[in-house]
Amino acid sequence: MNNQNNILKQETEIFVKNKNNLLKNSEGKYVLIKADQIIGIFDTHENAYDEGIKKFGNEPMLIKLIEEKDESLEIPSLMVGMLTLRKP
Image (tube, rainbow, N blue to C red; front, side, top):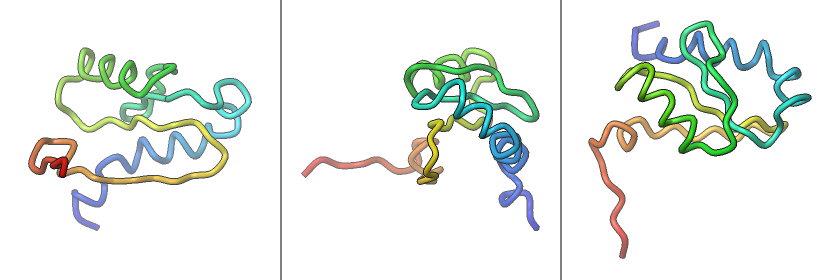
């Protein structure tokens, strides 16, 4: 497995390991995970992102909505500004 496939693997494993507890205590909120640590729980994605940037700069980190159903959307090119969405 190459390094690109390993990005956020550890963070995703921490989320899965703690998912039941997160659902019990913080469903509907956002969790910020860096490496093997849950950094915090936030009411909005924006608040989690702001905290992550403040603490870690432009490094990979996982921000995930805490919900029973997992509907992940991965768009790393958009996240790093390589692509932009255009409004019609």
